[in-house]
Image (cartoon, rainbow, N blue to C red; front, side, top):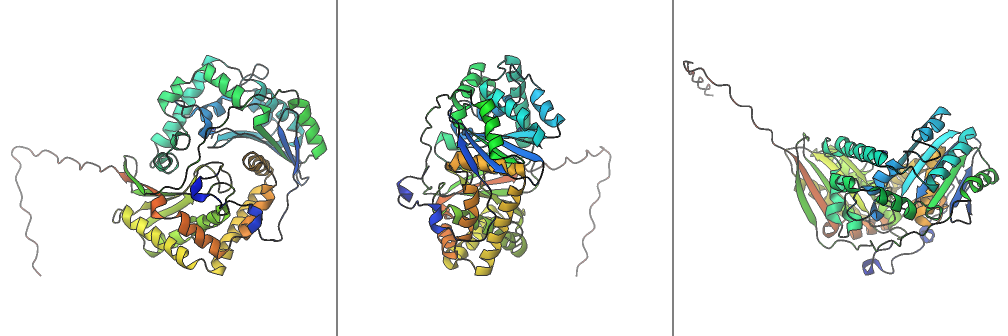
Length: 472
């Protein structure tokens, strides 16, 4: 944004994803992995089709692990990572990369924070120097902290507070759906918590979570593994590993009763409803079936929800679905599948939910037609492979897979997992997870606008009586 497994409920249901992977012709990315003595994991995917590279550094910390009473801190810290170091003052990072024709960014998610760059291959060495430099230390000063606190607060104003439906399906729904603080607090942060962050908080966060042993560095593009490993060793090898705090237990089971809330929205023109269901944990046999089911139900204009509610019943104006701030294979803790619909004022949330339940019920009872299932999986595979053609996205995906799964080669396994999903798998996922007791709903309604006041009549104005209507 610069901008674990569930407990006893699902015990015994987890197995290796490879157990249900189907063999298929697929594009296999080259994946070369090396771990430095200081714990930094390095991944290189060689591809000489363009004289460019994509670089991603992913730290295994995000909103889920930020300090209590410091909501939004992981995101604030992401901003601070661009504010310079003693060796490369503010502005040097951006000028070095963009001046060479590249670009850079970063984002914060529940389970990781990533920093990404793409540039001509001639810029690889400066990029690695800059990334290593800010892994070592930052320019900790009160002026920079105050500046970025204000920047993040303004980002919240622009993206949430001053937007219709601002963040309600991403930030408000999890607060209602989850029990544990790690999962249900606002990752964007409250102004009070952001203002309360101190330089000591910043130093401690960098010390605890931004060491090489808590990071993965991936490089994709016009470089050989030997060249890339040598450069990474040169710039990162001397950085000492640092102790990382043990994560708290943030696992949660499925919900056992529906949760509902109603909100008002002064900026919205039409009402909206967000419905969310807890999904299987990472690595569970139902993760891929749930991903396919999500695409079947809410993946574009051909989806069951769109065809059923927007086209068929004509009660919804739009339908979109997703896994919060992460993708269906990019989470490491309790996560939701959330469907958001804008709906017509002549209907209501209960009618929309009943329509969703009807479509879900058909899948849970009858499974999926073979032709439809093939279309859905083909769309997913095309999207996955298209994303990996871009060197920046490829490097970032490799780094995320290594961080979350402990295996960068998951990037080559996902297509087989998708291909291996059967109608029975989708049917089971629908019947297990998309049930009312596991559902959380927020109905957000526009604030009624007051009727304009009638213009005052002059004291001597004549009063006219409307003529009676013609009788038929």
